[in-house]
Length: 410
Image (tube, rainbow, N blue to C red; front, top):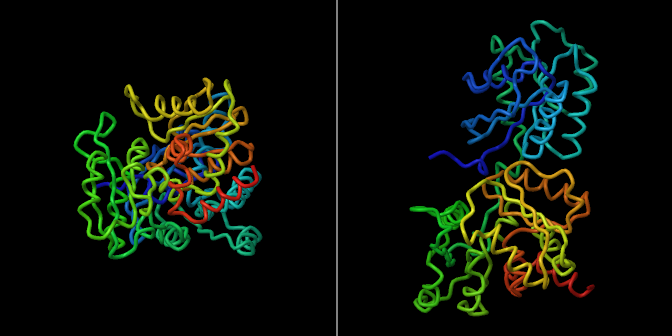
């Protein structure tokens, strides 16, 4: 089974037109993934290639358009290239010893500002002689570099080894989703509604990942529908350590779960796993500041056809309007595109981003913080608007402390 993108290390190739980014990608993957041509600007939209890079595991290479593209269409390509930085875990800047200059330095500084591990590839080394001053500069800045000739494979093996060596620590030792909250030998109850939004014949990704994480943590796991929860709990000789529910069933599950049992939702688990839970807790508390007519952005990572009672387009807007006491001006965005004018919004509400890597979610949190716009996610929004926020945060002491401190100040 193919690993989802959220499990893959995202490796972005950046640089000017015609420096050999696509040739490097083809050499790394041993496949003709990207079209290679002497014509500058052959790569337009980012090209993605998933593969296994052993012993690291599943990775996703992203080949981007040149950052020196020209014209109106070229400007759009450049915007797509810069947007690809938001989901890049490991950046590769492709250039050569002759042309390294302003564009490359701008990229390198951007990677440094975002704390993205970076590798410099000086391609076409058979044509351009290395400049010792440039190599010394990389060495003094402790930026790894590799000299390659993609057309004959020179340096490609060294580049692979450099990628393995510089993979981010948080990818190699991924944090758990839920097992650390339960512990070995303890049980978790997962509440999974089977309704119109449930995919036919399968579970959604956060549910599957949570089950696997619990098994990896040597925890017990029981999966039930919401109407079976009370009966299932009565059959336990020892109560489960934690109940995790789909956020849409929060109210019923909270009513059926004894207060001494910890309770949260899959979405809140992913606010921690994929993002920054304390920051998103602050964002949820901004709901109290909303007024009728305020602009709110609801952002989803993946595209799907909304059904009648869709969580993002129907239920959350309804619950929020009921809480505020008036209609809000709600807009929607899906996929990797993020509005440039986010400062216009009073609140951004994001899905769990289970299909993304964590880097992209953190990039959105960073942009929202820079624009001074609070950002939260679906589960936190639902818990807050339904009045069960504090209980949903009980499993997360640090986040709960943030909530209590802010609540005292307000």
